[in-house]
Image 1 (cartoon, rainbow, N blue to C red):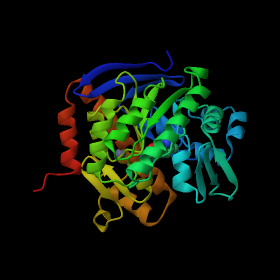
Image 2 (cartoon, rainbow, N blue to C red):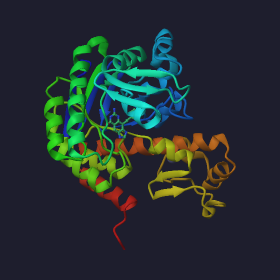
Image 3 (cartoon, rainbow, N blue to C red):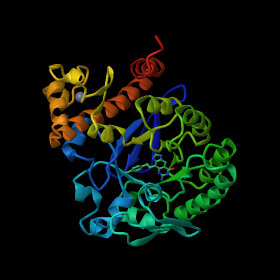
Length: 372
Ligand SMILES: Cc1ccc(CCc2c3nc[nH]c3cc3c(=O)[nH]c(N)nc23)cc1
Ligand SMILES: [Zn+2]
């Protein structure tokens, strides 16, 4: 049934699961490529399918401002508009307001902000952002929350929880479980305070959401801080529902999350870094602009079977990047998205066979080789 989450194997806290959505089953642990204005930059839907994408992220904030969620609804919803027939998860937009919009104001009713496109004034309330996500036709919707800025003190973070929890309750009230097959996930906040993380998990996980996200991480903190709060917070979320770690992360961060029982991940790294020539391979990171690749006939990653690695040399990829050719974006993004999707697919395989620890250790060797 839509919304069902079943666990098929476990390996320590790591689990192999399946989330049933209106547009298909998501096998977890899953990596979700980040789409912004109705596209995963430079990729077409077929590229996404070829790379193994199951579920992609759509951006509520951007689509609301342009072309408008009501226009998308009139065009049949985001799936039809962008020709992606798999599951789509959309964020509530509050986080994007704080990272993109200049003028914004937090009020008990919602977030007031000015469009970064034309300066027009807008108000995101818990109910409004659900109307937008319903218009987009998202399969998994997120509640409006306040992502507390890194470094906020205990008092501010505590006060912010009152708002975030009140908004979560209003969101659940506004969208009944199973409505139109669109799932609603709650978001746990609490900053970097373990007592507030417990308080938020207690409050949010008692509101009968179909899944729970860990918010407020990947906001500029150190890896050690992120891992510490992750280890503390993940087990507080009910094990029988999907756990989504928002905005995470680098390959090793995703594996750390899986080890602690997280099921869903999103990160802009594969797409953003593809555009600045930072490529992820089975031999570590490759900065394709480096002179050492000028005459390198080898594929970017001999262990990768993506279109880019099957057809082009590092020399050609470097040339495209240096020449600022549009094809550079596309070939680099095809590879990086495939790398992150293969990382998740390999993790599912490893958990299924009780070999996750070895799998994680292999990647640590690649991306964080032990000091020689
Ligand atoms: C299209 C899209 C882009 C990005 C996201 C996740 C964006 C994101 C975070 N990214 C890094 N850290 C993050 C924390 C939060 C958070 O606490 N709350 C919300 N609602 N989103 C977050 C979702 C969808
Ligand atoms: Zn490749």
